[in-house]
Amino acid sequence: MFKLMKYFIKQTLVAFYVVGQTYRVQKQIIKKNQIISKENFEFDEDEFEAFIKSCFVENTQTYVSTVIDTFNQGCVDSCSHSRYKELGIKIDNIKILCLKNYSIFIGMYELNQFQKEMKKFQVDYVFSPYLALIFNNKKVKNGIYILYTDSFVALLIYEDENKPKYSNLYKFEIDTTEDIESEDEENIEDIEDIESLEDIESLEDIEDIEELDNIEEDEEDIEEDSLEELSEEPLEKSDIKEEIINFKNEIDTIDFIKNSIKDYYENYSDNFLEKGYLFYDGDISDKFIKNIQDEMFLDIQQEKIEILDMLNDLALKEINV
Image (tube, rainbow, N blue to C red; front, side):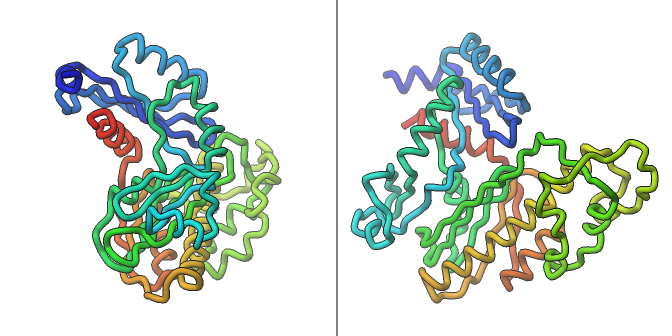
């Protein structure tokens, strides 16, 4: 009877994840399992806390979900504790979610700390980023799946088509709210000269983004076309900061993918990867896709997805269980 009542009552679903100090949020109003309205927002922490409170005032049937991007989590190709022991994973310190013939795990300490931080937002559901990749499983053998966001990268490799054999996650360390600006034009001009990954090693100054000092307002000698590789139009300093962050994130992602594939071949399987899928939330460059393909020696199919949509979809499934 309770499930039937819920079917006819309006429900508010709020999904969010954090990039730097920005809360990206989606609010859905659901009735009879159908979306009757959907809005996206960006807030700072105080604004988001006030927003959540207003949602509960508006509708007590409000459910809040988010994604946890801590390092100590992954997928295992079994639900058996003996398999965890084979992989050197201590089961006393993790929480395991069994999904048919494989499982997702997360460290209890990290989960508890995260839940404490999220308590003020009244979070109901905390989802692993791997669920977004499992959600998009294309049912192919020897396939690699990559989820790219402005906050983290998650990766799954399937040896067979039904369960992941390998998982890895990388969280970007750069705070997108910091005032990252160029000391002089050389750091920006270096970026436009990059034609391949071999050129990346020359960008030693970019690696220490935290040390880039302020651009003097009277530096009028920076030519507009020095950013041609980054944008078709001249950029403001805030746009330059964002482009540098995105550029470095793409470099870190390619490094992460290369190291993950190497680890997979050395420690998990000698079956060569045949297909690749890149799911991204936000924007990516064509050069980024090409560099990934060149490094992996296989074609990558790319697909834009909405993480917030998926979080709300997963939350609705949990509500209806």
